[in-house]
Image (cartoon, rainbow over the protein chains, first blue to last red):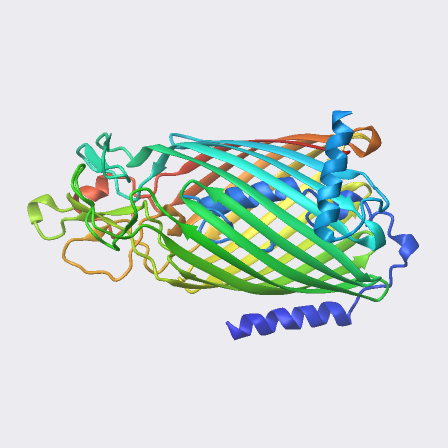
Length: 72
Length: 419
């Protein structure tokens, strides 16, 4: 388990340190589009999350919390 | 006229909640509406309706409200295995019963559930590069209540190129099943006979934290990495699920069903996952990729790969194919059935705790309209495949499908606009 967490931290550090070419604010036209946001369609994502939560044994990741349902 | 009254009322309520004046600068609500209808072959049908409204306030703050209503009806697998003879099961209330034909998957076709949920998010921009998100939710079913909340901190660096985030969350759940909470691994009483129960309701709690990073890679791509940890405790058992107890001693009737017992799960579950997401703009098209690795104290490990590609047909229309692959290992206490000669501390035959693979294949067709409005419809197919004839099956069980495939058709509709 600790190996996995260490691996994650290492990846995060690598990403931060190699932090990519500087992208100036005026170069972010494409990035500012709605479809380029993480979780750009909240309703669609929330319905998918609820569907998969009720059908599978694991959940989480993109969302914030648990399922909030009995889902029998 | 009625519209503006509702808007003024809703705005006033929100501003009162936030302790600010109604005369603050007003911006329109961004409203996102969604509907989902899923149809499982020979099992359940569900309909979910959702509304999300987000409004930007002064100084970069924003509020979001979400309403969710769903209803599910049809036949839910009760955990027992199919048998070569018809089977009779007692309903959860203990009063009635339902029959299942020979060689059919035992499923409770009297099942119907409705759920209403409400959630609230307030995004507070404390400085140009530091934000706190406050969340809360409430979800209600006739036999289930869930309340929860959380905090998330986001700090930007390098002219908003890098965002570090971290958060905590808490959830309280109360289950009050029809008929009461059954005693773990107790035999199912015949209809009309009093079923011993340990209580009328039970609680479960979950708390956790997450940390992560959002990173702009270049002017066309960005990524996110998150690690999340949570601990669930309390009554984590499904009060409606049972297991078949199988004869493994009488050589002439190996695999015959002798009894049905209620399932039992450990009262503790530590959960962890690592999530990675990547988005890239490809001359107007958008590639959306994510991967999650999950592991928990019940020995469930899963891999989830999700890929969408938004293909622009022209300035207005797009097509978005979607593929998702999911693979999970079984919980340590998953058993398709119990052998009569063995004893167990915990056992569940819930298919969701079995080892299986799942695939989603779908397509979405969307249209951008004037004034920021957007409309889309989607069609998806979801299927689960597990081990139908495991080596652990004995005698008569070998003739039965011990993990019948789940095949589901999902239809979705979305409409968003400024209000």
